[in-house]
Image 1 (spheres, helix red, strand yellow):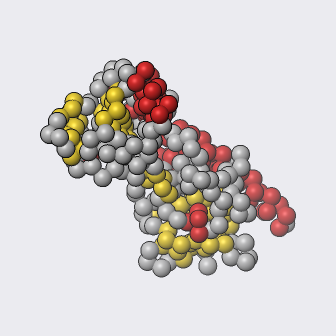
Image 2 (spheres, helix red, strand yellow):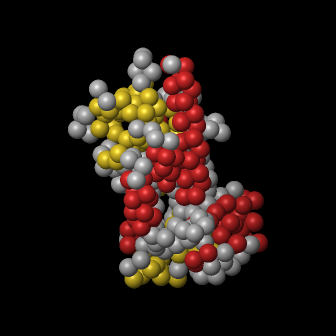
Image 3 (tube, one colour):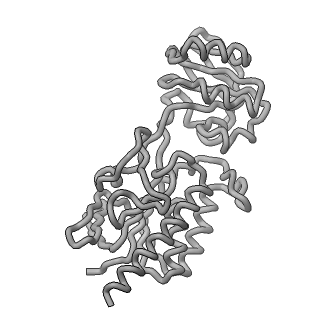
Length: 302
């Protein structure tokens, strides 16, 4: 039975950066990636020095080339189950039933957005429809921006977008979660609230231009930001018994350790600050922390 030093589940910036650190520590690492990174639809990464606007697939391609020289083993498979055994080893099983064992386990699977069910949204998502103003606000500065918040309160995001544009409209799609005071603030900030149902989104491929309402009215809109929540890419963290926040992310300490000894979590799956550069940094921290724990165990075993 092959026992790896570390199994990493998730091939995004967190998992890949952890793999680099651990590979350079001469650890026997196996990384699983099912290829469903959250930002694959994006036109480019932002807020990452030296990598500004790089296409996510190009970023991943460079990363995979770099980890090869450190002999990190990678596989495009999905881990469907994981648990900690009584002998303190972790066991992971993929979709084919194959089993893998490791001394330490790192979850870096990230999150996935709950994309609103608006007809035509798939033509614009990641290009002119977004969820993060810090990632895409600069690219649509001073354009006509819409905020979509059907099932949630969009007040905070609507106010925030005034940093990037004076032309902001909040679309509630027949729902109303706004408090009276919030409505007053929006009015003072010249942010319109449109309650009519959205029938469709129109524009050229990748470029939103109009929102069609059920009263046959069309409103110009260059970019749409939505508030619709997110969820874990997989349930491994929950099934392993990780403590979670109310927002559904894993609680870790400053070294990326979860509440299960030997289990580490890094990236969007563990924190609310969901930037690629932050995920990569957390992966590096997790890699160092894991290696130190392995060093302690190796020293005691002598």
